[in-house]
Length: 387
Image 1: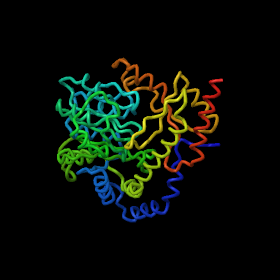
Image 2: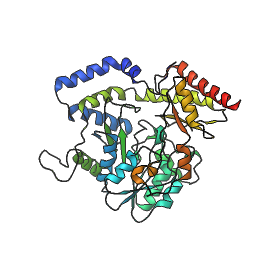
Image 3: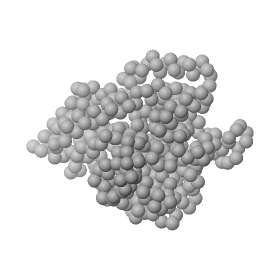
Image 4: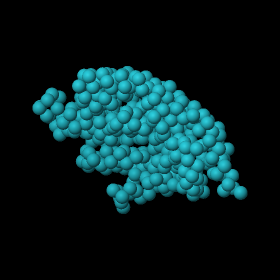
């Protein structure tokens, strides 16, 4: 038995004629950087997400950096974010000269805890950067109320959450927000709720290119104008540079691939939800496993369980012996990485979750038999350690 955590070949085989044809047209055009295909993708994503502007860049990391710069966040500023994410989240803040301030997270969702955000606000705080981790939207109604109260900007890190929708059921949050705030956001796609959204099109994402790529989304005309300038060396027109910028242009070949895939994203996200629902049903009554929270807007970029009693690595090795792939996202909280050594006090809950999380195979084409085989292997493992 061999079950990878992700198999991109199946998706390509299903779309081969469409993707190959789209790439061939770009090759014929010889317009390889930005150009018509990028413009069309930007328009289509803006329409899909319900935002005024979408700006293609060359990675999700650059999307975060340029978003921060376009909001005039830099030296001496503080940005509150989560310690439980890929390093690009904190790295982008540090790279613009600001300081990441790490709030606590929620045990059930793995996302930033809105109550903890308030505790971290200082006169230097300029923005909040929530991460919609594993495809689960953060509690944006509460976060937005805090931002409005304190005059803060919101940069949504949507790297793992293309197509995820926010629903204002609060999922047990202790902080109350107004009905109007929740209702105005109910059913909105992430990336269109805060001031700016930042997406990654890394190949493993729900909407993935065949190389690096990213997108900035916003409803703010001025932010969009600055982002477009920043991605091309700070210029509105060639050889007329007005500010220090970046070389962060989306390739036309990646854009045309993404345009093909965008047609299928809702179908794929629904398939991910169906797989997650099956896993939850198969693994839900297990003394050693905590299954992830399920909500209608969660698009399950990762299906991540928690393994109790310090047994996570043992289960990972057991699955590997059975030919089943799994991954740990993330084994070290951002604030405890070597780059920030000694700067931050560890969060006990984040440390605990980092030692418990294990992501199982999930992708839209995952065969039914493989879902059952993964669950059966985990159930058998729990029986073995119980005997």
